[in-house]
Length: 189
Image (cartoon, rainbow, N blue to C red; front, side, top):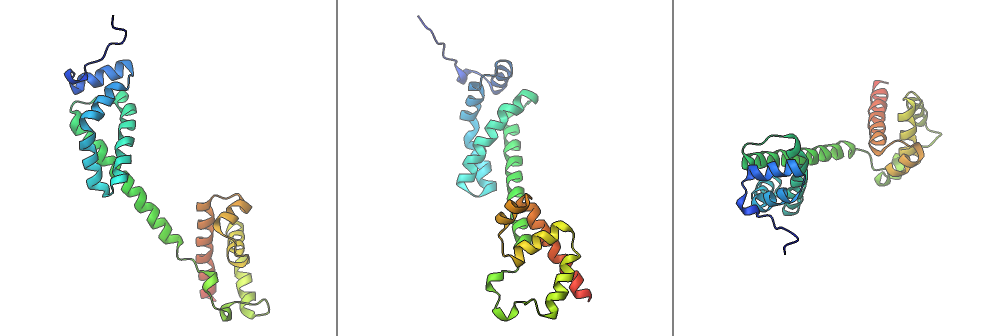
C-alpha cells in the first residue's frame, strides 16, 4: 500500500511544472525548476556580480521571487525568462550598491574634528566665532540643530539620531546641506 505518491518531475516539461505550480501552489514544482536551472542562474549572477557569495544569495532570492512572479506572469520560454530575471536582479543589486557607495562618498567629505590642530579651533572670544555663530543662526532649525550637535558638541550620527529622532539619512543630509549653506554664507561676506 502506498501512502505517499512520489511525483515524477523529470517527466514534466517546464510549462507543465509552472502550470501545476500555479494551480496547486506546491513549491516542489518550482523546486524542480531550481534543480534544473540553478546552475545557469548562478553563472549569470557570478558573471555580473563578480562575487561567489553574492551570486549564491542572488540565486536563492531569484527563486524566492520566482514563487511570487509565476503566479502573475505567463511565461513561454522559461529558460530565457529565468535568464532575464537573473540579469535584472543582478543589475538592481549593482545599482543599489553603487548608489550606497555614492551616498557614502557624498557624506564622507565632512571635516574630521579630531584631526584638526588646536590652532584651528575657534574660541568664543574670537571675531570668527561671532561670524560663524550668526551664520549658524541663519540656518533652518533642523540644519542648525544637527550642525551644533555634530561640530560643536562632537556627537556622532547615531547620537544625533537618538537625540533628534531624525533617521540617519536625514541627519547626514541636514549636516551636508547646513555645511553648504554655511560655506555660501561665509564666502559671500
